[in-house]
Length: 130
Image (cartoon, rainbow, N blue to C red; front, side, top):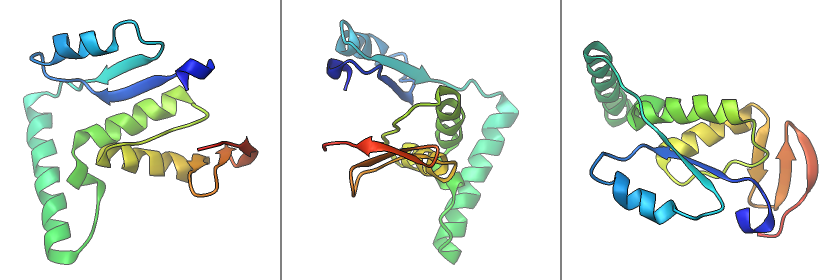
């Protein structure tokens, strides 16, 4: 898409310091931008996040309820940042990203991959060739 002249930004988990040099080499000179999302939670926020994740997994295991807490804190962070971008197209490749993209779809922004119809804020703007 970047090669076709579109502005492309990839939102992803900010990798551990161990992988940052490798990632920097991978994206050097590319026509698209990578934004690594990192949260720096306090000790209390870490405890809350772990408790939420545990409870989310228990709710699924015992009751069959799928929920965002199973995905960890990255899901909310991706949703928050996705809302800031107001992009015409969102593509998700991870569980947390798919949850965030689904929330954005519910808000009226999505790309319907089945029909190839691009929809922005509920208005059809054309067909894309996939």
